[in-house]
Image (cartoon, rainbow over all chains, first blue to last red; front, side, top):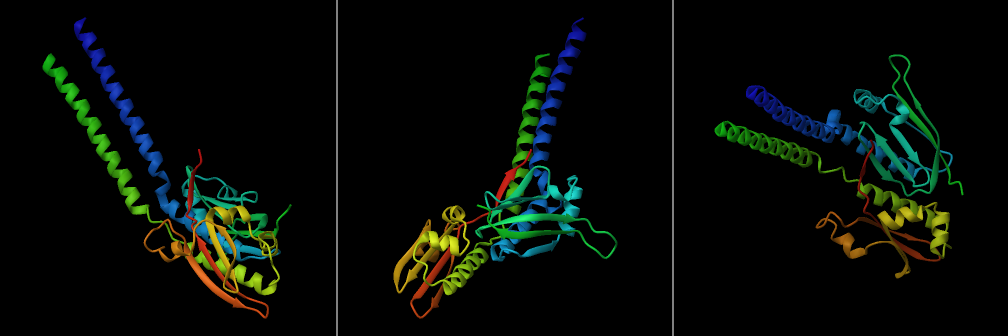
Length: 141
Length: 145
């Protein structure tokens, strides 16, 4: 009887410890998950580059960029569609790039324009690469 | 029995201590490796300066801030929060938008929170404009769950 009580007490203690370790490991994994495939670095780079292009663009311009590298990173980080990667917010004049499930990188652009006709394209065939095109138009009032 | 219990207790404390050290090391390591973001402030400040210079060259008759924002297609809120624009016309202050001043521009290499600035002068028949633009903007990382 005593032995059984002891065994169950030990089991309880060990289970508690295991649960604590699992929670701790999950929290750490969540924190460092976005560094997988340098997702953080690439998302920062693309958000700054795209906001720079928008800053220098004029209404009527159509911008097309190759996104082969970052679409591979997004796919490896289990983002299912290309449109999940890019978030253009016309109200805030902001572009956000998301390459991991947990974090996106955002940058403002000072050019007072709207972004429309956002069109991510999957490549067909060996020689083509994934691309994103969008149109810069005058701000809608 | 008591010794065994003491041993259990010590083991638990040791385990928690090791996890804390491992956690701090991982987080610290990630922070040290990735903390330096790409600094685009010089590029942004140059782009803003170019845009304003081009606009004032085409529209030298601009007199108010509102005219500057509408003729040059500039987003007022974004500029006020993240940038600095100082425009002098014929050596006297014409506009100042955003936070900071020229002193901060000069001290940008001493403090990473100061703006990195670009200065340009344009001359027309009517006036001479000295345009100083600076960028404070740093990347923002937003958690998405």
